[in-house]
Image 1 (cartoon, rainbow, N blue to C red):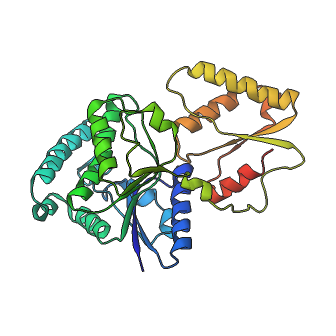
Image 2 (cartoon, rainbow, N blue to C red; image 1 turned 45 degrees about the horizontal axis):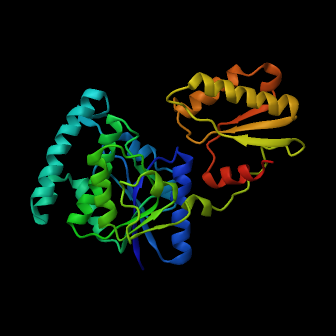
Image 3 (cartoon, rainbow, N blue to C red; image 1 turned 45 degrees about the vertical axis):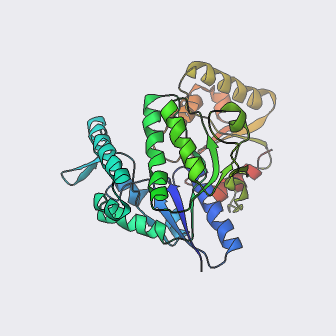
Length: 329
């Protein structure tokens, strides 16, 4: 029986990421019915998110272990705190710890890890195949905060390489990476990988400073497209109407223009074309930019339009969302 480690497991509440993870696990078990799959979280064992954000994923894998370099925070007074000062202190401590781990020999590296982190590393090293969860991890979003996040994303792969642990990068988008240091770190991750599978050919032409033409790089579809549909009974979709489905996103700029365009588009679909419009929630967490945007757009709609707009906020499985998308015209 082969054992697999899926790295960078993000929250159940992000339906796109969860869909990628569930589809990957299902495909593994099709290819290897006896596969033992463990997940490595993006959250520290002391972070409440570690327990809260993998409720669904835990049902599909053998075990989920905490991150080695988790979402930044500081454990103070029995509580994991994520205020900016705490994050900055945690980052400074992690920078020092990571530097020492890269300098000292392997037999001493585990001295710098907490007990839960050592267990996670040991479990990863015990696996036959180690791979990143697909998505979009290797980017700096052209911001200082993004640069720091990218550097931290690359640290796990540097640690695995130090321990001569073979890893694969599965179904990733790369870029934008504008910072020179970030590009060097990403290129090191690519170079040391057994194989890298891109999900977007656009990345090669768009970011020529990333080594995406290496012999160990090829293309594959996003694993999320392998997700099998799960029918919802009773269906929330009235097939007596023509149905249009959409998602909306929070915007960093030109927000007013974006809202105006979406409101006009929905109004046209409802009034002129007589469609029922469905807005699907992709991140089921309060105060998410996408959710705030959806709620704002709905409030901006004239009443006669809003009556023909349904905002789906039920905590659907990704497989159920796939089925709902399939009901759209």
